[in-house]
Structure formats: structure tokens, C-alpha cells
Amino acid sequence: MIADNPQQKSHSKLLLEQVSKEYPISGGDRLLAVSDVSFDVIENEVCVLLGPSGCGKSTILHMMAGLNDPTAGRLTLDGREIHGPSRDRGMVFQGYTSFPWLTVEQNVEYGMRLNKVPPAERRQRVDFFIDRVNLTRFRKAYPKQLSGGMKQRVAIARMLANAPEISLMDEPFGALDAETRWHMQELLLDIIDDSQMTVVMVTHDIPEALFLADRIVFLSSHPGRIKEILTMDFKQGRRITNKEELIETPGYIEIEREILHMMREEASDEE
Image (cartoon, helix red, strand yellow):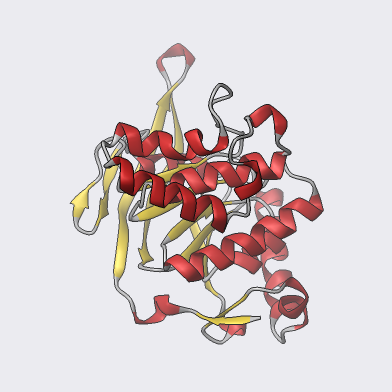
């Protein structure tokens, strides 16, 4: 299936301007994790952060979420500078983050309770998003009764139910088996097209990046700098939501080869 990619007609949603991040280490020294990173995320875009291990992908995502502050530079969402977490940014982590003492529907509702969403609206959103991630039959189940893929669907439904302006995902499918991961990727693309949401996602998996991304921000090895921003021109302005079609699309093999070459370059620079 091929779906329209609405981000081409949209405006910049999230902006990073000369962002750097240092961490203190033993002996009074400081470790530069991210250096002078600037790029934007377009509204309704799926922007994937890709690069070798330790290049600062998750560090950048956590700064977008407001979980860490930049050492230099600034991040803005719709022109508002990011300082700390906020309901306008939703986060899905790689690990399963459901509350074990709450049912599926209670987990999905949890953030809305904190944000004082009226009960009738909470129920409506819970019903809608549990159905959208295909968990209606399991709404009364507890996390320990669910598979890994189901637990991650709960996390995605909880994030979406809070109606964030931008969704941030840190390797959300990294712990899943190959078949579940593939189905979750297709489900995510369906939800993105239905909800017109903006997504920034971290992954280390090249096929996953090529499947999901409208653009890929490729980061160099430590410290993280932008090596290249790749547009998925081979998709011709559309999202291909079927993996078999994606792999058979002219241009797929060439861009996969280009990214593999960049990965090897960065690995050799570390030696």
C-alpha cells in the first residue's frame, strides 16, 4: 500500500540550533556527546535519527523531550523554547513502561488523568486508541499477561491518547522479535497516516529507518555531529506501508548501500 506523505506541504515543527551536550566525568573532565547539531523536523514528518552506537541519537531525543538540557544551543517547538518535559511531547522508550498494577485501559488513561482530561473524553480516547492498536480484547488484562509487542502497543496507545504535538520514540521496537517488529512498524505507519502526527524516532536498524522515515538525520561517531541528512527521494513523496513493496522499489538498494558505506566509514574512524 502507498499512502500520501503530507509533510511535504507542511511547516517546520521542531528546530535544533547549534545544539551541543557535555556530561561531567571523573577527574573533573567533561565528555562531549553531541556537537553543534542543527536541523528541523517538519510537521507530519517521520524523522529518523540514525548512526553508529554512541553517536548521541538518544541524547538528542532526550533533549527534545526536555529530559536533559543542552549545554549550548537551543531547541524550540513551534517557536517555544523547550525547557523540561511537557504534554506537548510524547515519549515511547525501548523498554516496556506500563504500570504492572494497572490494566491496559488504566495504563492508557493514566496520563490523561494526570492532565485532568474530563472523564467522558478520557473514555472516548481510551476506546479509540485501544481499538486502533488492536488491543480491545485485552483491555482488562494486566501487562504481565501480554506479549512484548502488546506491551509496546499499550505504550504507543498511552502516548497517542495524550494528544502530543510531537511523538518521540527511542528504539521502541528494539527488544521485539523480527516478526513482531515488522508488524509493529506497519501498524505505526498506519497510525501516523491516520492521525497526521509528527514523529522523531531513534533506531540503529537501517531497514527500519528506510521503511519508516521521510528523512534520515545520519550522525557521525562520537561526538555526534550531522554527517548527512538523507531525503527518501526513491519513495517519490509517498509513504510505502508494505515492506515487500518498499524493498522492490527502485532506488531502495542504492540508498541502503549508501548508508551501509557511511556506517563503515564511521566504524573505521573509531579504530
